[in-house]
Amino acid sequence: MKLPLASLALTLLSALPLAGQEAVQTDLVIYGGTSAGVVAAVQAAKMGRSVALIEPSQHFGGMSVEGLGGSDIDNHKPFQNSPAVGGLTLQFYRKAARRYGKLAEFDEMLKTREKKPALWRFESHVAEEVFSTWMKEFPKIRLFPGTRLADAGGAVKEGPRLVALKAEGGQEFRGRMFIDATYEGDLLAAAGVSTTVGREGNAKYGETLNGIRANTTYNQFSVKLDPYKTPGDPSSGLIACIQDGVVGEHGAGDKSIQAYCFRLCFTKDPANRIPFAKPDGYNPDEYEIYRRYLKAGGKLWKPGPALPNGKTDLGSWHDLSGNMIGWNHDWPTATHARRQELFKHSLTFIQGLCWFSANDPSVPEDVRQAWSQWGVCKDEFQDHGGWPRMFYVRNGRRMISDFVLTEAHGRKENQVAVDDSVALVWWPFDLHNARRIVKDGAAWNEGTVFGGDKWAPFGVSYRSVVPKAAECVNLLTPTCPSSSYVAYGAIRLEWTFMVMGQSVATAAVLAMDSGVPVQQLDYQKLKLRLEKDAQVLDVP
Image (cartoon, rainbow, N blue to C red; front, side, top):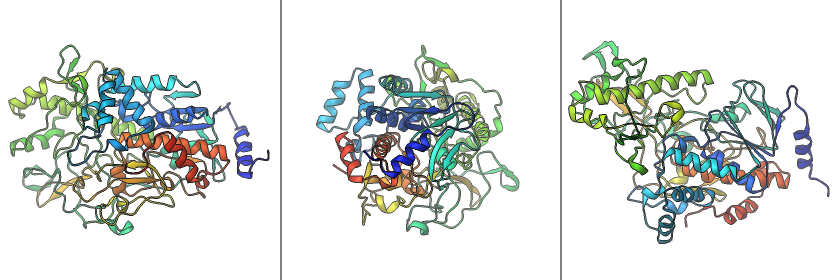
């Protein structure tokens, strides 16, 4: 049988030797062992393809194994989004439920369409066990933990085709297809794919929720807080956690992105608890904003059980909590060394905040007593002292392709339909504050968008997960789709990423089978396979 020209070229290029050491050769190379990366690897292996799953850290599963056990499924009264969870993603949750001896209850919940958010929740170490056990079922999946894309020259290309990924130290991974499943979009950038970071102005895509939010009220300070080192004196400079800058024009674009945090997993169980300790490098001046907040009558956040076995999943949703507002704007495009610096400073800060909340005399006694009952868990993040090993990267790079998902696709009124869906987004536009600046002489949070009744579920277009053909013909992404800042705010859930991971892996395999660039894959063929595999593509 005569091979199509594209298939012949792909086969020949994948066979070409690269200079230097012998490369790892697989059908599919996935960079980023996030939950999306794991599900993509499982799907490709189920379809008979060999996979190299490369992860910079030592752990596979992304935020699902780094504290984010509250899945944002059926946890809001106004809507029920569990019908959007299908395919391998639903299998993951069933496997987790089985670990807790609740599979029968879980399946009955699905049958009756009840809302039981607790059944969708899990501990990080349980998620990691599920992912690890799952991948071991497929010998075609080869794991490469502790392997990081080189900061320079990480992508080897022949024209618009990605031929190999090069890691630090020179190790090379060759494949016929590639997936960027990182939160930051590092492989996309290395491969020369167009990406963006920050907030577009509303005018760019005809949106209303993008750009500077000069009218931010959600998660706004509940008390007036003096921002200056010497109260009332602007010339004295700003206290920690507040940045220079003016509010700016409402709806105008800028390079700010919503705050990162750590998803904190704590316990009150004395047998499993490690008490909070003052970290090395603790700087009491960094917590002056919390002292002033309390003095002004603010109510400091407190831990509370949210996961199985009474553990927390603190995600920092308050006016003043653990969000690193304004700290992380350069993270998506930073070098590994710079990210390490940002991570270390932020981890020391959050460790210090927990110790501060449990011990500082400026904190009310009832708050100190509440915090003192909690501590990090002995059975979580055991190689990192009980603390998460990963930032909650709420925004990284976003691809810019021929198709861009925008606010219009998720509006309730005059919604723009997606006719080539590979996943169903069922969450409101969700953006945390991006800046903490001074307005009218007081500290002011800027940037939050959440909730309301003007949004609707929407499909993720296949065209939004593939690059422009001129830039790369064998690369897809489930985690950094072509979308506006606002639209990405609805997409960026772990379970949505997992759904998209299965879909892009399916597309990669079908493109290999057909010998075509990913942009030329027959969508109807892809849709049939996704539906066969129980993916949910439209509102049931």
